[in-house]
Image (cartoon, rainbow, N blue to C red; front, side, top):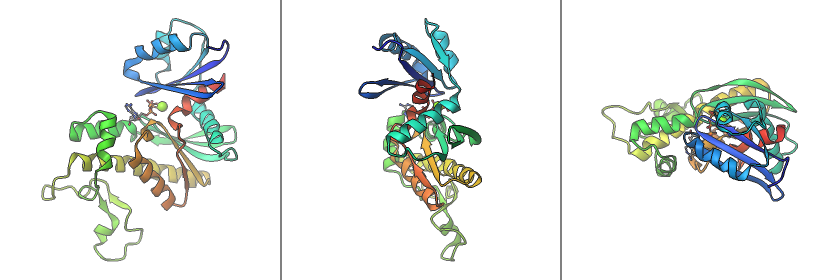
Length: 272
Ligand SMILES: Nc1ncnc2c1ncn2[C@@H]1O[C@H](COP(=O)(O)OP(=O)(O)OP(=O)(O)O)[C@@H](O)[C@H]1O
Ligand SMILES: [Mg+2]
């Protein structure tokens, strides 16, 4: 391991992400925040000679458990914005300097990134934690990998009401395939949706909520591009699909970087 080089740690409400720059590129690792001791052991083994730059809401928890004092705390939003710039450049978007950055973590935060500055524009409590929690309540499935596998086969029409279904054959004033009401088709007379359908609709609710807010932020900031990051997109093809399509429908260019869940960790590593 290289002396004097940093490792970035983004300790979030659900997952603790680590990013280390090596000669072969970035190395990534993540642990459930509930299993923080595993994360600490990993850091002791692989990052003993690296300076640690820590960010995220659980940064203090990591700091308290580390048996060392050579760490730096980095503010969460500046870390995720710095990491987004780095990962976007690595994916061929080096010229992108003015965009909305929507981080769909446990909750969702929205920043306007302009050059080297960033401004927090708001957010919502609807995020990845909602996917886990609401899907779990509805279906009893709480495991993330299982949930997103279910969602692949889910259909939303028994649960969600589109604009076209409300207008029933009339010409609607807005695109008919937009969701008029998430969960609005549910009633005691309607057919019972499967677990897969319920999970797909929860993901739909999260996707459409975070996209709607991001679109409003993009309109306010007068930018064309919305960059979506956060572990909620990991292997979640339904979330990606809805966010991509819905952003496009509003005339914005969505980008979901491949390693977007590590923006905070990468940014922290680079901030030292
Ligand atoms: N292995 C996993 N276990 C649990 N959730 C996962 C996993 N992989 C992806 N997720 C999804 O990612 C979400 C967490 O995303 P992320 O790691 O970006 O948030 P966080 O940084 O922990 O939270 P916050 O930034 O809000 O404090 C979860 O709520 C879940 O929807
Ligand atoms: Mg986070």
